[in-house]
Length: 191
Image 1 (tube, helix red, strand yellow):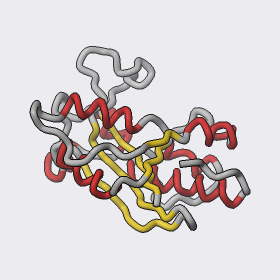
Image 2 (spheres, rainbow, N blue to C red):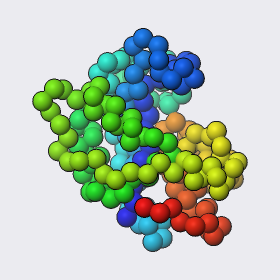
Image 3 (cartoon, rainbow, N blue to C red):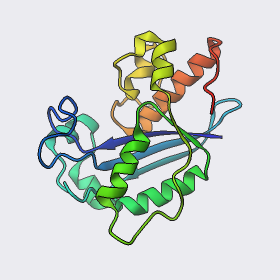
């Protein structure tokens, strides 16, 4: 089994280009999406999709809401504290290897500092992790510069959900890209 992970985190107009360096800009997790996938046949065996209430910036920017389609009301009503969502995600992973198209595990690590109260900690350790962006970009140069949600569309593949910047939909885009690589005979990602 492998886990495909994608995160959505707080953003403002220009925050990505500026590396979230302006005062008050933190990459706080707002959505954790993941797929549990049988590595033998790339069949989905489970989905994880959880909203998170950010602590430092509890009011989502209009930019973020427009980009992701995640409303303030949805986060206020259904969002979990970060540590609760992380614990549920770690249970979902069950120590299987996690793949993402980017440094999503770094973002989780930042959020352990930003959003976990002093004296508390996750109930499990973070699982082993691999960022597959470099590999995918090397083998499929058309993907260079694309977000995870654009991968399947740029390759002419059907993704399960037609929404970029939705963590679960972006996981399906990554999965379709992995299936494409396998069908094209590219060497598997070593995990």
